[in-house]
Image (cartoon, rainbow, N blue to C red; front, side, top):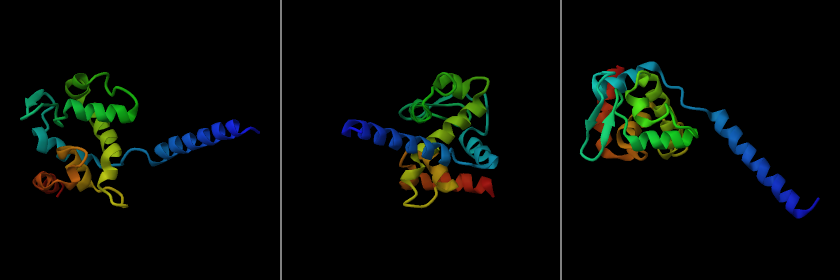
Length: 152
């Protein structure tokens, strides 16, 4: 077997392991109550809220998801979740579509918080509020307190 053929086989094997690992770990398994509380904190769980103008960008839907958040999640999922951002987060299926966006976003960025441990519900809530590094930002602590109170 030539050196080139061995290299091609090795690269193929490594890519297979990466795909299997991603599928094996899957998306986070979070309780419905977690999503209910994020929804409550963000919009009083109003499925018809539309968009709110934040200081910099629009946040839309009952989970107040920004377009960049949706893009990051869609890139990770390797699909345009819900077809497009606005349809996903404000359309007729906005609750389930937004949850899919959130799960992919959490899977993508949860590893930034864990320091070798499994990300927690607190990590995910703070990422939702503060972006990829949200779990490390002081400004997301008060957001987590609201979600935590809701969770009971």
